[in-house]
Image 1 (cartoon, rainbow over the protein chains, first blue to last red):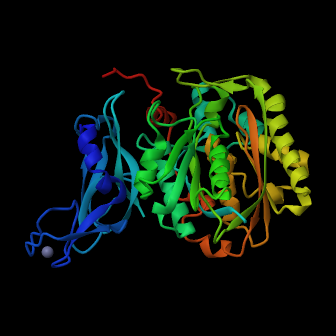
Image 2 (cartoon, rainbow over the protein chains, first blue to last red):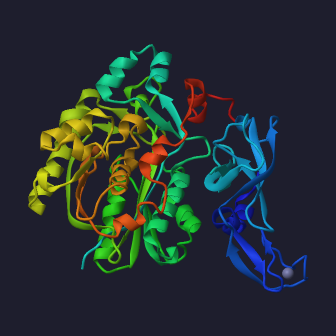
Length: 130
Length: 350
Ligand SMILES: [Zn+2]
């Protein structure tokens, strides 16, 4: 379970899909990082990720971790949003039987976790069929 | 200065439950409910959807149609009776997600099903007063009916968002009007999970009295008759009430049918008449005039008359349209799944 502080720190990525583009070589990082692993550059400009992409690979979670038990079975996939950016997230509102790589998906704002009955609600992105 | 709607957006969850499925579980007669309430099915939010998530999606659609920098939005008001937190605003999350923070006023509104139009009225008024360039009003709900109660056949989920401005409008606000009395037709006390209602009392002295009085007062103030208006949208707790109110006022089904979503959407409470208005704006033509009257138990109605401008045709296709969302690949659930989604099953508490 993520606490309120870490959740809060990740809001730009979780809510607005803010990534960082290296000023040296143009590589885009999500989440942003301090040093570019391609050119060792340290200067970045914020960019917003495209909000649709292609499913590259996925798995069906049948034995879910704590806090996600009620959602099983559910899909988690890696989606290519831009040339260098792949994002891993839950895929919802989809038919698990017919889900396939190459499928077009888009981001939607959803509740990602909740800390029991009284803790903070964590919002962020999931993928849905485009 | 003319003020009105610059952008609008809707969001409807994809899951549905049919009236037959609810009636099957409670031994009720489905045809009686379908005829009596004019309902066929309703939207169901998944456990990861709530007022905040639906409001973010509707707000993003509104921003696309408004074509504005969200950082310039000066206020965000979300009207709902199902805000996810008892204490902590829904609006802060939505404003942050759409990139409207930190220079922005924010409040969550509550007034049963009228909270959405309340937020719209206040946002519109702030722009009219010259306090800000853009203001956003949202109506959204994921309301619950008690298991087996008549409300369980209608209580559904959806959201509509509006950006008000004085430039590049898609609909000018020609008139507003409000009508309110203290009427205990529906309520929920603190710590109670489900609302209670006054049964038959919810009809004549509540919904009809306020809806009809507001519509009549609004048309009198604006000096218009039903024939001067191309479209009419009402609060829609079921399929029956708004049709009856419309006809009593002299509107035809050609005028009120497009904005009447409840037969296949259910009652989205604070989202209901705001969503109906989005469905009308999706098809409206320049020059069309629209009457919109909300209703919230407790009880009161807000009324607006909108005049559609030439810009409407440029924005209608910029975001998902409302009836298209209503028909888009619905996922039907059985009552067990529905009960699980809506937290109606008592589990071992953590
Ligand atoms: Zn680089």
